[in-house]
Image: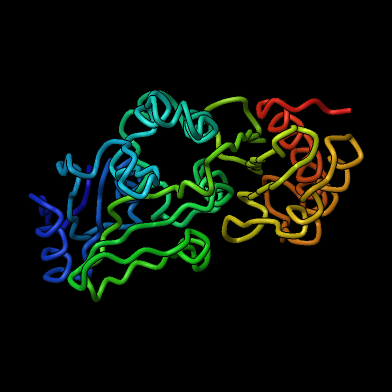
Length: 296
């Protein structure tokens, strides 16, 4: 069923790094919801695999000493959706990953695997970009952290240094990115469930203390380009603006300055641009409502 050369099971993060240095051509496998499917299809036939699935130290959601929300890379989608820290501070991430596949996939698929495959349609990707996530990588040189926007290099490729034996160990959401912020995610697909996104849009806002203006807005898309992307033009267009439909219109139209939609068998470039504008508007309005604001 699965044509693999060898399977090595890591006993610790340090052991996983050592195995990767010893077998640089090997593929890291966690839940296997992507890797095993590709192997069954013959795309990774004959590969060596390094399994990190047994490393419970990479599971769970905590708040660290710097008040970052720390999500272990092996935390499953189901656990993220149910986690009390996620529900309290970044509930939109739980909502986004709850749109991945079906219950079986969400029970075994991991946040680390969803980001490390470098796919722009990953349901977690746009929300993690909008919340300015930091990716933590561990290798022989120690721990390296970089913004998630720099982690994605191109379609299907991320910045993991195989020569250093790196594996992804966590995703961090800085306090400055989640404190008093509220967001919403919309996934547009051909079906209401069990489908890959044609376009994904995630927005979050922080309102002024009197809840009359937008102090800060963040927006990111999946499938609006080869990698997930932020829209700085739209974010700037909403900054310090009143909570009006006019602001929402300006914000949504500004995304066209930043996205790089393309034609594909799923949707045309023109259609993707059309729904990108509408999704941005709806996400902003819902985010404002969740933050306690009223659109005038």
